[in-house]
Image (tube, rainbow, N blue to C red):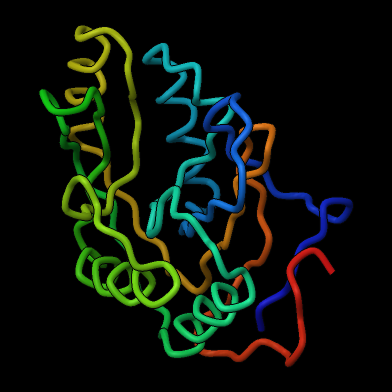
Length: 201
């Protein structure tokens, strides 16, 4: 089932995305990459000179930086989507880039791509509906805003990378006033949350 995570109980890494305080609630939903795949990708990202390697655990973003004006409705919506979702397999294979639009090199999501897109579609609705600047493209970032040479290196050196895992959960994060993404609830697919649960309780 889904389980809320309080500030004092949290043991999972937080996601640092900025230092400016943000008024109101911003939420994100991600699929965490499991070990040992996560550790390998983190080491690769660090090797390309990306300082975010130590701050941002490898993940697939499903929803990013979305305002939540109605927190109870947002929680209920994300829980409902999780309850209706079945587990699926993700295969990460080779690399791609968003250059020249954005300075990002990533590992491709091959198997599971359509499942991620559909999950995103259902999440980015209701209280989380918004227009995105770019079409949603599931991926795992391995280099961001580093030199062109290092991005070229990332794209080449991980060209033969391949790993698979089963996705059974997704994490609901809140962007706090310190600029950190904090896990509020880890939701298991296909199970309903207990009535009356609140993140941080």
